[in-house]
Image (tube, helix red, strand yellow):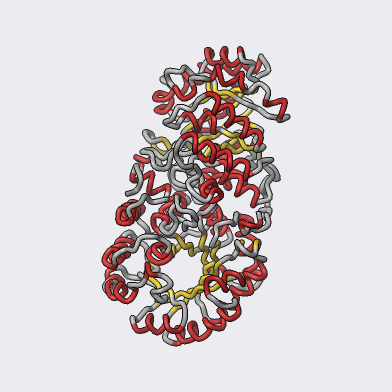
Length: 319
Length: 319
């Protein structure tokens, strides 16, 4: 990439040699887009992401179509992805599962990886899951239990890990308590979400220190930052320094149009890859191929990508 | 700011307690905008920035109007700012000076602070300054000498400190050599610019280590990052860890429209302030007042602000 004037990668001491990117664009991204994307476009999107080197791609959600019409085609989408893991060894295509009914659907489609979505705050649990945080944990117990019995790996999302728009600051101990419960239920991995994008690096370090004090190995933790206030990449850097090696990101920054009322965009995978490769950290991702994919998807959505890297490398609006 | 769900500030070990923001929006920002802004709007912009708590605001450039028509009104603007330092004790309003002719104009207007603009690469010197890098240094010698004799503080900008679109990676030693020469000429401060926004945190750390090896005290260094690939804030974090306490930023991210061909935007001051305040680092800036100012300016420019924080806090396009 000499034509970009790119300096040689420089390893920073204490950072990992490799990072696994958990790509959430097709699920978390498209779920938060206004447009309904045809199922064949979704399938091609996921195939292109895999071809660009991503090896963990959250594909869709087996949530009730009434709640998330954008992902109402999960049943049609999953069979279209059947050949991908053979073409790309090591490829994982987790699906989100809100409850036992969703788990039944995921198991019927032979999902090898699922994810559940919990909240670190009471208010968000009630608003998003329609039950208390404790009741949500109780609901997840049979989901995680049955999944692990069936040999399915479960990721637990924990949202509102730093701040909550109704409750304000969220205490580290409270986040650690709910996170540990998800791990104790049997989740293999815990993704710590800054759902409203308010965190800054010191808070990230403090939360990860809290999990370390509770005896949680850092390789069971992932981070999930939103770029609402432009902080996602600095927070990721802080997490890498604490030993985190799994980072959630959304191709092209899908899920948060910068000119929508609530700019709750996910960290763009391209901006993340730019930083990681500059730091000499392996991701397996081909950046140009990924940027081309996000440009193509922006065209399907009819709006530019909010990713700075996509904008810069496509030389325009990313469409 | 409880209504934002903002977590309590958390100091990160090894970071400074206070950062001086060198606001470049009125000069570097407006210089790179397509629109010509009326002089009375510029004066109000600077007055609002000062009222928001910024204490170093680069006001304009005494460059030949032919080269930068956006700043052709420097002679009219500077007298309009005359009362500001009295209203805001400690306020500094540096002006850019390209050569001795520019210095004459700045001195005629009683400038107390000026800046000169050099390049760490040969190609950019020839393209931007129309002479070799060495010839540029020779040109600055009488500028810096006469300014310091007159009691005027000089900041030296050094551009292309990491990568150059024509030369590729820029060696640390080369950047340090030119930077040290600027300091030896008499510059009080050296601002290290990632003009094309390609750097990542390891490269920032390596460059600052190079200056430390050359015996340059870190308090004479500032950093100037561009958000072309979304890396500006992570790079700033890396610089803070090395002891840098002066950071350049542009209110509202002025100077780089995200949907222009070359998205060469400056780091947005608001995104920087969000991180610094979250880290418990003092800036003296009132974020809401600054965001209101950038929203007002976006309206004058007729386009949204590219700052994520401005977009989020104004709840829309920032216009």
